[in-house]
Image 1 (cartoon, rainbow, N blue to C red):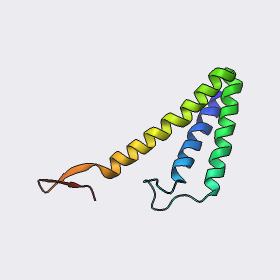
Image 2 (image 1 turned 90 degrees about the vertical axis):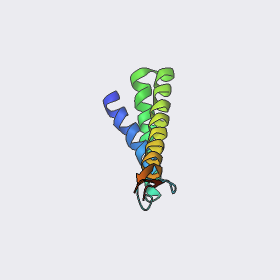
Image 3 (image 1 turned 90 degrees about the horizontal axis):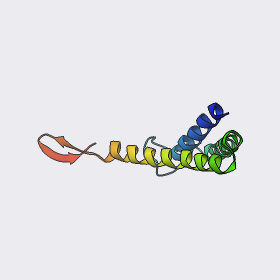
Length: 95
């Protein structure tokens, strides 16, 4: 059961991030229907985690698998886009 829950949870996080207007990976955010799909995937993933692990542990795993990747995606995107690097011997913003 977790074999289906893990990809559903991670796909939901990616769709939530890429459909946000302040995301930094795409030039334009994904359309609003991607948020609906992400919500459905997150709910499906949570239900599958609860079915596989029980109510308490399943909900905790589902919440962590929505929270931790979302945090890491935002941190990695910010680090990649906003990193200061040496440019011609001076510290400058990465274009």
